[in-house]
Figure 1 (spheres, rainbow, N blue to C red):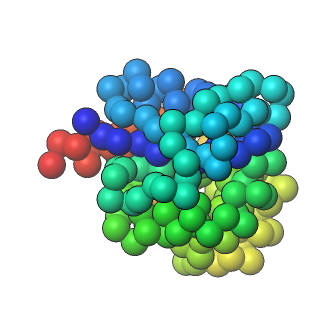
Figure 2: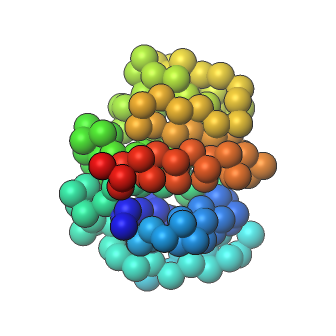
Figure 3: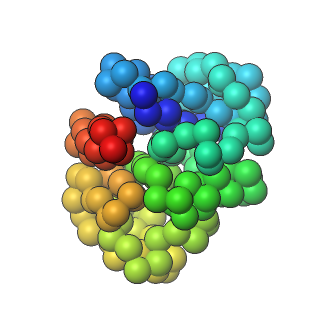
Length: 171
């Protein structure tokens, strides 16, 4: 069974955390939500309980990390442990998935240089300045990296994460 880590902080885009959380569970994967406190609230007020303190997460314990968008990524990219786990999971070839403004986290983790990516249009320049090859598509996959633009792209985003994890767990 694949193990999925979802990084969280207050002001995440509600559906960009909740939808993947339930889709991954529906696919039979073990999901862990990690944050610096016991509960985080979405941009529109949806509360989500954290299963684990993000400062205690280790890349070896997970097969994928999902980073939701909203305003949370602007805070998350200042947390060394969150950048560290994203960087380490990428280095190990594990699935790293970012949607919307979560592109800030993968840019700050320095893992997108020379790679195909997408994000919310407002951070396109940030993605390009971090070395990403940005395109305006609902989902972009470059090796183990999966990126999407906005909430409307969640079905394609989750389909690609599940596809990559299914391939990984079939080995």
